[in-house]
Amino acid sequence: AHGFFVEATIGARGWVNGIGDITSVGPWATIGIGFEIFDFLHVLLQAEGSMHTTNAPPPPASTAFEVLGGGAALRLQGNFTEAFAMWIAGQFAVMIATTDILELYGFQDSTTIGIAYGGEVGIDWHFGARHHSRGILGGVRHFPSLEGSGGSAPALGIHGSAYLRYVF
Image 1 (cartoon, rainbow, N blue to C red):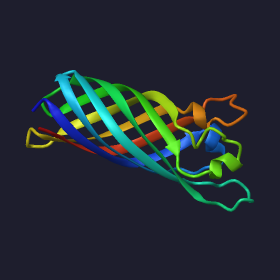
Image 2 (tube, rainbow, N blue to C red; image 1 turned 45 degrees about the vertical axis):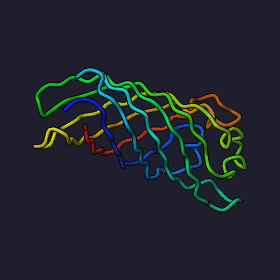
Image 3 (tube, helix red, strand yellow; image 1 turned 180 degrees about the horizontal axis):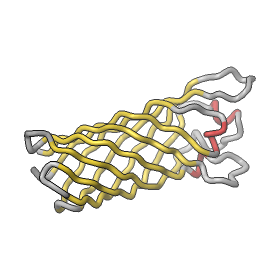
Image 4 (cartoon, one colour; image 1 turned 90 degrees about the vertical axis):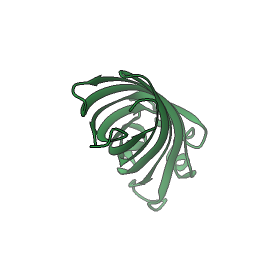
């Protein structure tokens, strides 16, 4: 089946540099709608969120925060069989951290709407029914607003997940 689809993912996101120096890996989830323009080209709009805890020495005490956002992706897919495909995607997103705890650690732009950009790779398997598929994906995004005042190394969000897709 080809055309419009919905996709939901659940996995984890961790950080390298920037807020990665004071936070832990946390659960990450997305929900999105997309359209298969051709067998090899898909566009996708997503809403996403992840939850993390700070692990820097107190004060302040360790606390939880969320990173929420939405974005768009353009995927190029290679269909190897009727049931198996691999894809690569470029992504652009907007995001915001939900609490001011990161500002206390010097990440002054964390509570304003920031951008993120990067990419993903994935493997897709189709169920017996042509409308359903499942897969795994992994990706990396650069989050400039989460680099902090030093900002010498890019703040990278690294994520991995499993997903389910339904094509109408």
